[in-house]
Image (spheres, one colour):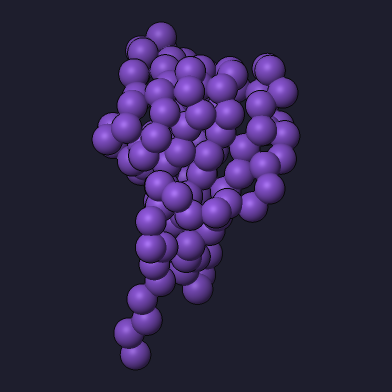
Length: 118
């Protein structure tokens, strides 16, 4: 049996009401819409959006690949490496990654997360 899950337009799909981002320094709001999660919970994909501001992130136990749809941001990892993101950017934050993100313009991305076995 083949089943397809889709989102007609990730740029404009309506997301749930935003909630406070727990790791924000600035009281940012974020929202996420899960599109699909594997039966075993080891893989998921969806659309995420975050308001401007600064927050920390850590990839404990999972890899993430994402494509930026809208907005701009700057990421600085724990080693001080800076990454500039804008619409069209594709980036990977592997398990163990940590750093700080500064969202300059509301940011929307499509993400895929793979849980890493420990």
